[in-house]
Length: 144
Image (cartoon, rainbow, N blue to C red; front, top):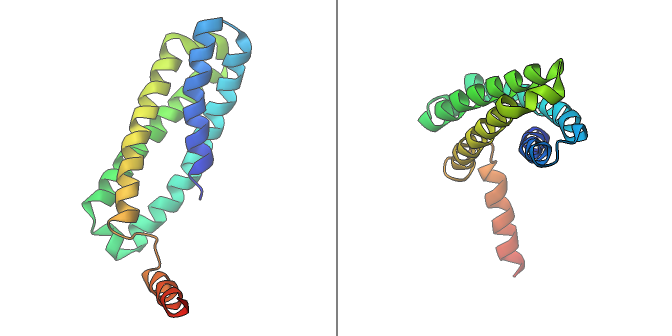
């Protein structure tokens, strides 16, 4: 649940950068500064929770997919943080070309990290209480 706000902020950052490119309205650059900050800081918070899972749960630690997901997440959070820091002093000047480029690279890495995260949940059942799911399924069958 921690990941939704940072992902939304970083994806909307691409949209605000494109809007600034098309309109040259400084509002979009200022909005991008805020979205970059929310995305980077929120991403580090959710990354800390993911790191705790990675180092404390042996079943997760043994999965190559988990390590790949973690490495890509660190790369994407580094780019998102750089993007935010680049915009801090001069939000308007930072958008083109480097802010937009970093936003697009971050979005690309997010799609790859999201794919690997989906594999962890849906293929490896990381974070899924399989006993509870089985109990719910058995109760539903009994009530039919």
